[in-house]
Image (cartoon, rainbow, N blue to C red):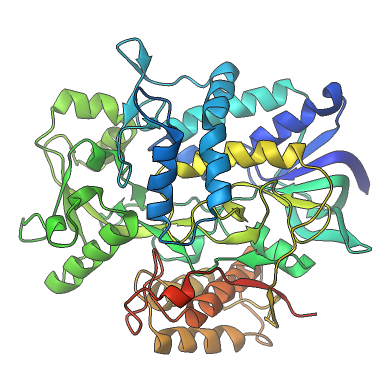
Length: 503
């Protein structure tokens, strides 16, 4: 069976929902739009975003300051033009989200602005305390349904359809196992990230890197795949699912202590707990290794208990389920895979190297984040570039990309095996020996049937192989990519790596 639309959106996080909503209003409201998501429409990384959305909307703040903070965090690899677009358009996107009904938290009659690591001033808008993502997701799902977008949930995209060198839609698997081809003049990838590649992650089960794998197989180039951001503080309790502990806690004054009770971050960076995420994550890993502890402690006890409970209701209530009261008890935390800076290469309008295919959100690499994403820039990047993808003229991105012959249809025996391999070899700290071993293992499964040969695992294997290849080739340390055998940053590596499938 085949259906045809003006726009096909793959993914139901804020990127996909916002793009679908705007597309439904294009051409005077006459555009036909289908949104496909492999799970429930409400399930995405957006739902779990706690910190908020960064924008220079407060008194005395400026887009140029936001630009400078973003470029510094990106460790010399940001596309300055892309960052300029993002910070320039921030005010308009916040206005649009407000008009759509996002219930921002307020303080003294104005929007409350929080502080987070590596921002030079408070500029983080939040909603529902630490439930910002869920608040935005709920509003956007309602607006998309009101707009008449055809939502096909529990439909898994299995491949992009390419005819004459153009993407013309996607092949999907319906809940009953049958196939549905969805044709579209424009296909927008908004499938999110791939945190499930790692043993510990803040991402939900659906974050398996499907969009990057689909695009790479179809011929689109990917970029900056070595840069994986590990959030420094995820809850680490035996038998308890990994759960994000927002950076906003440290923004409000929470202190990191090692197993000896010592505050350690000032030894690693003058900014202490508010250093960039890669620095804090590696510092925590160092302290854990030095003491043999599976975690460090995040101490919030010096903050007012009523304030903590009201400002961070999601974290507070989640921890209480496991008899942990964060207003008085230190929180056991450890780093976990959180965000992919790399993805499908796009230009400033979301256009990829494959005509007819656009991308936005975490699946895309716009160049905004460089080697290390600045906290709370992800939701802003999403709404800025989702709108530009919908408004884009016809055209494609032209870049030089290295052709790779990868085992695109192979998968290891199970998800846990892949996760452990990437955690150990392509995690917070890497080295050439570990990366070469991982590459050999992943290449070795080319002709090995998987005991769990589902499409997600196949996509994860391909994504993992791209991370390993990029990390092995980058013989330096920069941002979230740290090579123990090349521990310094090299001027000659102030450039991105782009790959495409060998023809």
